[in-house]
Length: 222
Image (tube, rainbow, N blue to C red; front, side):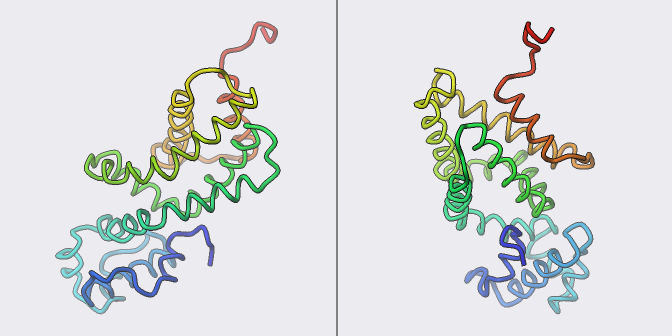
């Protein structure tokens, strides 16, 4: 069982929601177990229904689609768990031998790429839902700002004070940070999900170089 796999974590929880009916509890438990065992894409609603001991129509009546079934479990879990998860991630990263902002970037990228690879299908579904569902974006935004944006801004301020980053407003650097890193994750794992990366370490180093130095060739390199 991986501590980074969200489905493993959900399976370990004995009571997912006190608001669920007995049938819903059985459906959710069967779905999570099958998703973890076979993968989300390889699990059908008929298999979930069989595992839960209910009719397939019961799943459609309660959740509508398989995506909605997963979201009904994952999203409340994310909202409940994001403070502790964010705290653990930043503590883990900052406990390493972080000497400069590039080291922080490298550790963060390695950590989050590993996490997304462990939860690729969930990441794809949640991102697609956020992109198209304005109400969901507004619902998750406060959690994102309080637990992730504020921590990244704090790190940016630390390295600005050390003279490593350019003297522009921290919120501008923060927006560029999320635009670049977030855009990379979405393009790699959602929009271009079929593309593969042969050398993960080299990819990370290229990301760091582009983010820190840009893509324009310097005069001395021409």
